[in-house]
Length: 295
Image 1 (cartoon, rainbow, N blue to C red):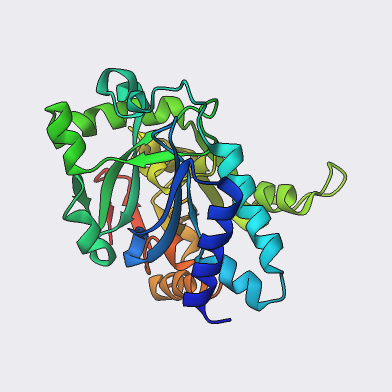
Image 2: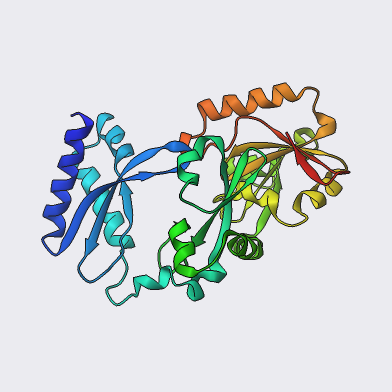
């Protein structure tokens, strides 16, 4: 079944499952790195907000053999499981006084997001961009975020500088930094117990993110973060942007050629990282003496 017909089948199935008391439609959403996805939105009469389910990846599941009914079950479950209670005030999610303490920031690629950046407040950082979002309390919606756009600023009567100051204050508190050796990270990923661990001294690589592992590459911008890490590692540090969610750090004394680092980043991006999660195609250096980032 070709993708256009697949979309229509999903839409009709959702209309049948949710009935007439809701509005169901597709909306094209511009995501990170210029990716445009088809978001299925279900709005109930008693609630002004509902999660957006992107159907693009589900078509691939269908092509690989999963039945249409099974996919519809998945989508229905997501919508029902994440829709807000009917007495919840959806406007509270964009009320400045109620969300100001939940405004944080993330890093995205500047050149790959020129269209998106036209509509959202941002600051350029090297060849990247700092953008801002509202981290919604998980008690309300699990792992949900709202990207702040220029309309929000007009409604709030705030400027980008004020939002940036709030985000830099809130992020280290809400999204605590987490630095682990690559050895520790691999041991956790593979489920090894204490009786067998990778040797930290052999790896000389570290993973920096936040505790939620969500948009954790931005941790490099926390106040004094890289300065303190350089002290810990006793020298300048190369930063490999493995995704928007984390970076890999390597002491500069362990690096022979920067070009090899850049090749590694490109290779991982091409083979391991979804396009929407790619941050950059090259490494960066934090210069301890100058206290600045270079690339």
